[in-house]
Length: 112
Length: 117
Image (cartoon, rainbow over all chains, first blue to last red; front, side, top):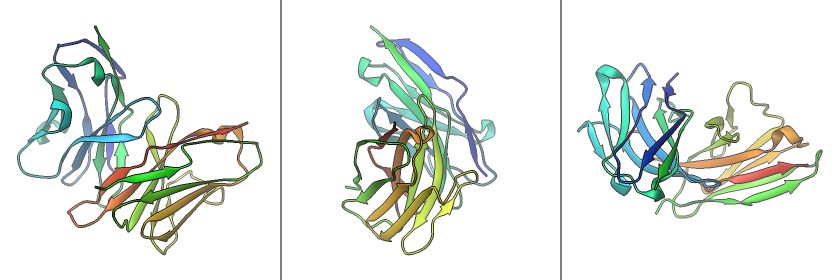
């Protein structure tokens, strides 16, 4: 079965600084990879996804992620963080049964 | 498009009672729906996968007699927490799978906060 590791539980960045959230996955076949954002008490919003093709994926809200098969990684990046980006971010990997496994999440705090 | 709703958004119930949570795909038909549970400051844990017209498939460790799932139509799945106890208090999130691609894209509902007193 597939699994996901998000090594960073909590990250704090200053507003305007760049951001990178790490995600490593384990899956024997071609993975379907996702990044979601969750605000407190809310559901999940899809930021971006990777199924195939170009390994650099653009998403909403200025986010992008790069799939690196050799490193089993799918890190999320944003060049300049806004205060409204403070939230919980989840990386997920989809498997052959159309089920998804989520990482533990990374909580992003943005300093003014 | 691809909107999923959940009802209720919050529910408080007494220990020993049962609670039903509805998950609806509003503008598409979902052959498959998924139920997740999220503990405070934790990730989502898949509880079960339900396919329309058939029995749900439960993840290991999830009590199927306690968490009853019904997927009676292509737009509605329900999760009933039977004989709820305080340890069942959690945030329950459903998602609906949109078929047609190489992978079911899942669209998530806003979640239901269950508090058992």
